[in-house]
Every structure is written in C-alpha cells, then in structure tokens.
Image (cartoon, one colour):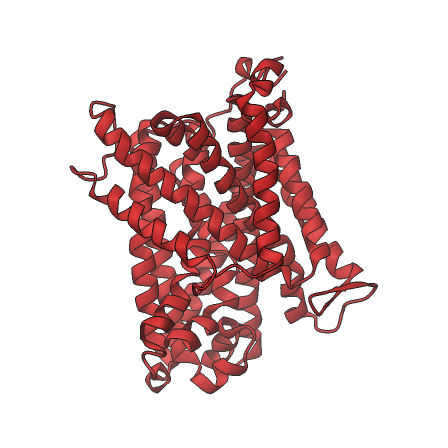
Length: 460
C-alpha cells in the first residue's frame, strides 16, 4: 500500500505541542554545562549570552511560527524551503536538520550512562576499548543502548504515547528547576555573583556558541504540525511561547547556580547545577534530586528528536529524496516506523564511542542546525516577497525584519564553526562526523537528481 493512501493521525493537543518543544530544549545541558557558562563568562556574562542567543532563537522561531501556521505539513523545514527555494535547497536543509536531530538522539544515548556515573560511581565492568583516552565498558554501553530501545519502541507504537511520556518528564524537569530557583532565592549568597563578567565579549561568545544546540527543539513543532489537532494560528503561537519559556528557564538556572556556588567551587565541580542545589539546601540528597531532573531532560530531548528526525526522513522519502523505505507508515500505528527504527539503531550504537563522543556530537550537530536555520530564514524572506498573499494564520510582523535578522545571525553562527573561530570543529573527530554525513547526503542527492527514488514509488 502506498504512503499516500495512509495518513498521519491528528492526535496532538496544544499542551502536547508545548511540552514536546519545551522538553526538547530542556535536556541534559542545563545540568552539566552551567558551571562552564559561569566560569567562561561570569554570572551576568552568562545571562547576557542567553539573552543574545535567545534573541537569535526568537527571530528564527518567529520565522518558523509563521511558516508552520501557513504550511502545517510533516517535515517542517523540508516543506518551507522546497516551496521557496526549490528541491536542491530543500534537500540541503532537510539533511542538515536531520544531522542536528540525529546528533541529539545519539548524544542522549551517551548522556544517559554518563549520568549513572554520578549516581553510582565505579559501577563499570566489562572493559571493551579506549577511545580518546576514555575507557568504554560493556555495562556502560548497555545502559545507553537499552535506553535507546525503550525510546524507539514508544515512538514506534505511536505519537500520542510519546507525547504523554514527554509531558510527564517535562513536568519533572520544571519541578527540579523551580526547586533550585527557590533554594537560590532563600539561601543564595549574592557575593557568589562576582565576578559578574569574565573574559569580556570573548567569554560571552564562548557561551553563545552553545546556544544553538541548547535551544534546538522548538522546531520539532513544525515537524509534527500535520499531526496537531488545533487551529493553524495556534501552532505558531505555542512555538513562540515554548522558546520564551526555555530562555527564561536557562537564565534562571544560570542565576541560581551563580548564587549557589563561588568561582572556586565551580572550577572543581563536574555537575555544577546539582552541586549548587546541594549547597543551597545543605544536603547531598537535593543534589541527587536535581540529577533526576537531568535524567528527565535526557528522556524528553531524546524522545523529541526521534519524533522530529523521523518526520523529516519520512517527508524526504515522500518527496523522492530518499529511498521509499524511509517513507513507510506503519499500517496500525500510523507512525513513520522505518525512519524511527533508523534513528533508534544509530542511538543504540552511539554509546560504543564512549563518553568523549558527547562533545563531538554537540559540535557536529550544532553546525547542521544553524545551516537549516539559515535556509529557513532565507525561505521566509523569499516567500514574503514572492507570495505576499499566501494565507498566514500567524504572521511574524508586518515587515520581513525577523527574517533578515535570523538570516544574518544564523550566518554568523555558521562562521563560528570553521577553523580559527571560537567553536571551530575539532579535527579529526568532528570533521569526520560532518564529512561522513555530507558524503552520505551527496550519494542520496545525486540519486535524487537522477529521479531514482521518484521512479521507485515512495512507500510501496
């Protein structure tokens, strides 16, 4: 049976959409990276970095909000760029954002056993090999791989089941964050906020380059817009609300951790947010509660990006850009089951690279994300010019100013990943990841141009 004869189900409510995006953005990074933010830029410097980065994300998010409400179809970027810039650019945007989504899914598969290191020290057994100076053990790998199997299975069964999981664990994250903020307000030490700035704009830039990876997730809403059971204008509205919520959360965490630990303590901690919570309440038990909030963040990000990545691959297959295998909808569950399995298998394999892979995956995936953002901004501007009368239930301002701002800022972020820049990709690991993904994409692109996948009959 062809894909076109089956349809994705409209099963998502407005709260499902909100929690999908918010949970995607509030992953594990706020637990493990907060100390780096503050030691790199200072307490106020970190807040400034999130304010600037948040402005970029809002500009990009407004582009997405308008386009998602105008074209509420599965695939998100894939659809917008295809309509505005054509098939070739759509392939580039879709393949780039898929790199971002796959990178987060695989990141979480490595992050999960990393968290267990903090809760159960010295539990590792079954030495396998050493990669980049880090010993990989069998039981460590199995924790990440089994987690991948569970997340994949839930997404295979249906989007509504995945959305329920998302809501529960997002509420756990928010509760842990609010507890930290409450502790900082009651027991925080204002003297810990000094130094307010470290390294000037260089320090702020060091935090700023992390923003695309930390905030990626709001764009899961456009991926599932076709499965949302609510008015089109509200799709855009809830996307913007989710972005603002994540910005406020990250800024509050930065301030809370700053109030809970001084610079000397931040320099020696591995999990600054958890240790700050322990300091503020005077108990190691509270630190472990915070880590459980981080585990919830791993689950929500992982879940969201299996959802988002599988929908992009499905949309690409429907358009004749990828083999029809990726375009199969499950006859009973109405999920893009093969695309879900593909991302699930990559997640299961990721822990074999060991803990060192965390940084490589973040950087490689971040580049793919900002390339997609750039092309979406360009599409936003082009459609405003070429199709001014297109129905836009949610409109991001009268002029295309947010498109131009997103275009310039996205290009600036892309430049940061190249040699000589603060976030330059590490040779050879990160460049191999990006290069390998590029070569695989090039293979599919050439076959797409030859019409191979269109001729094969998508979803047969």
